[in-house]
Amino acid sequence: MRLHYACSAAKMQRMTALTIRDVPDDALATLKARAAQAGKSLQAYALDVLVGEASRPTLAEVAARAEAEASASLSTSDVLTAIRDARAGR
Image (cartoon, rainbow, N blue to C red; front, side, top):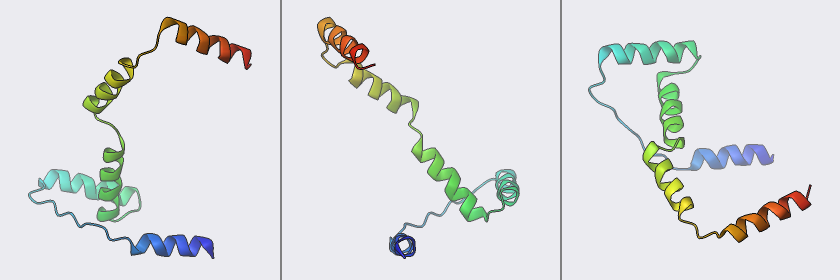
């Protein structure tokens, strides 16, 4: 019952439609073939590709995250304390 409710709730979410124009014929043929090979419709396959791409950070996003983490104000003492605490917890 709970699973059915979760599925129904997910279906009720409003999703935005996306139209892609001027797809080159060779790219479309490749996508159709890959969709068929995966046992999916072109729409389902394209959605999986787009969601997968959106879920991976870009190089710029990774660099920005690394920069933010590198600018954290940790002293050598803080690091050594964290190492000691981690070793003591083993």
